[in-house]
Amino acid sequence: MTDLTARPRVNGDVSFWFAETAPGARRERLDRDLQAGVVFVGAGYTSLWGAYYLKQAKPELDIVILERETAGFGASSRNGGWLSYGLPGQASRYAKSHGKQSVVDFQREIFGTIDEVLRVAAVEGIDADLAKDGEIAIATNAAQRARLRAEFEGAAEWGFGADDLRWVEGRELDDFARLEGGTAGLWSPHCARVQPAKLARGLADAVERMGVRIYENTGVSEIRPREAVTVDGHTVRADYIVRGTEGFTPSLKGQKRDWLPKLSSMIVTEPLGDRVIDEIFWSSSVMVRDAAHFFCYIHKTAENRIALGGPGVPYLWGSRTDDHGKTAERSVRELHQALLRLFPMLGDARIDHTWTGVLGIPRDWSATVSVDHEQGVAVAGGYVGDGVSSTNLAGRTLRDLILREDTELTRMPWVNKRIRKWEPEPLRWVALNGMYSIYSLADRLEARSDSARTSFLATAANIVTGRH
Image (tube, rainbow, N blue to C red):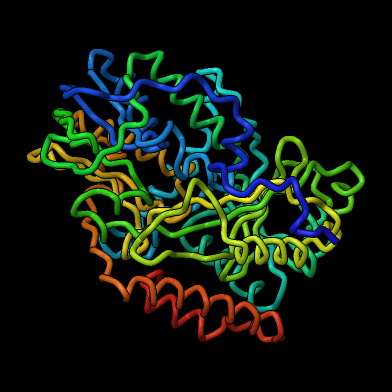
């Protein structure tokens, strides 16, 4: 079995995806005051997509992106590599405020967003290891199976059919992947693999070719009406300042409790041989997750590595973020244990890289795209783990909102959604760390039981934290 103390194993260095991507020349640092039409704060997916679609719609618009580190440094280069179909928030909350049909329309937009990302990548010549073979959630005990079945039947009640979700069980699971103890699964074609850092850097290059200016090593300390103030004291004025800082939002003055920076960690194995790939029945590029509360998201890379993310230290006191992706050893051990639990045949596979990313979590676990025309301030984020696809939709929605166009996108239920602030410490720390401890315990109890009922602990945790 792999010795996790063996070297070489890279811990941090932003992420495996980031390290694997050849960096370009460092971009200029902003050293003066500036005037522009639209300024995006943060050079992640939200800002890059927003700038791309705005510049496409209005080429004469002067657009600037300010980035504290380098383009794609944050969650855009540290995620699980899933262009997923998940809604960025709770369907029930959106339905309560805007009606059931609005949620169905929203979900259809997310489905279509996956193909839109593939289209733009092809048009712009972005080689990001994209492959659309769908995703499958696999149950490994009775309670997980019951939850997946309820999700499948619920989707049918909302009007989604076999072209969107399909129930899979028994030997048919081997057409996708073999998870230890897997009995049934829920498959959707609406998912694609992506090398996220390649996509982020490709988008940054694309918007620069269009005339967008990106300033790196230029942190922003405060956003005011029509102004962004850099950490060096320079002021950037614009008709609109767009906050696209996601999990790094608490670093901005007065916004420490807007988004909670939730940590998510990953490991990636060495490239696996054909014999091992055949043993786990993973011949396609289908994305795989288990159906636990503290679930793992799993990805076979273009070079036959297995990347797995999930359990670990979820939150740091005071809304602190990680140190360039460095991962706590506790998180590494838990991820490796999860890998071996789901794929025991990988016991001898070397772990080459571990890293941590930061998600932006709103208090009600539902994202927003908002524009205040009077103040000249816009916000997009809080994608709760489904940002690789949702950011593209957010970028197109920001375009329409800033240009004051009335479109189907501007009528989606996340538009101009009001966000409740998180509680002060120590309540944030207790809530997040306590919640994930409860989920972990609930998963262990469900694994030891033959009951199809979801653990009451997980149900209670969902209610207390606002996830459902």
